[in-house]
Amino acid sequence: MTLEEIQTGQVLLIDKPMGWSSFQAVNKIKWDIKKSYKLKKIKVGHAGTLDPLATGLLLICTGKFTKKIADLQGQAKEYTGCITLGATRPSYDMETEIDQTFETDHISEEMIQKTTLDFIGDIEQYPPVFSALKKDGKRLYEFAREGKSVDIQPRTVNISSFEITRIEMPNVHFKVTCSKGTYIRSLAYDFGKVLNSGAYLSELRRTKIGDYNVNNAIDPNTFNSLLES
Picture 1 (cartoon, rainbow, N blue to C red):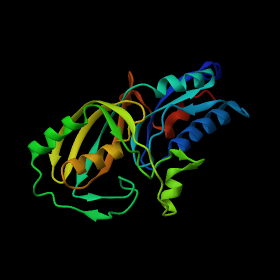
Picture 2: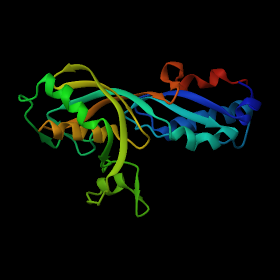
Picture 3: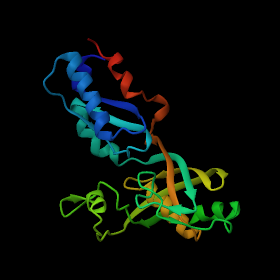
Picture 4: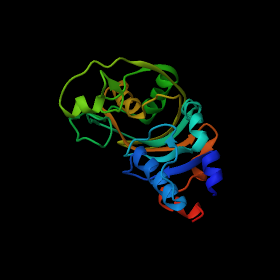
């Protein structure tokens, strides 16, 4: 990959590793480019945050293609993952400890399959309190970590498909296609409520953004091998 190609613009398909923030992935790509071509600055940005505990497709744009970020963010996204029933966590995922446990004996595989239908189409969803959304100039997770309650407004998102791929109680494996702004953590939490139980997201991988597929993505640690030095 030449410097001219990078500056003209590239959409890089990155397979974000577990534990990395989206910001870290962007910084790694930016550092590699600046080091290889001895640049002081280069425009690099990502098209849609992926939580540190999630893996999968992160689109990173370089040069003039950073102007395409808004369009890319608006495309439908596909995820695979696992919902664990019978407990809740304040963050709705593995970031925080279990705060409540619930019965799951009443939940059948048929109930689980039927419950997915409640989430197809346009739905109202409350973002998790542990999220990067801003309120009064402060990120929600900052309020949450300080133990402060905050009024969060629901928003309308669209789930175009929600498929259960495997059930190994209490773990429910799924594949979902959804609109921009959908929180899969909130989907997991709400799924547990509809089943008269609790639930949290125990695993998440983003597999597609529009026509971009994680199967064509690279590990950010190997990106520098594509650059001319």
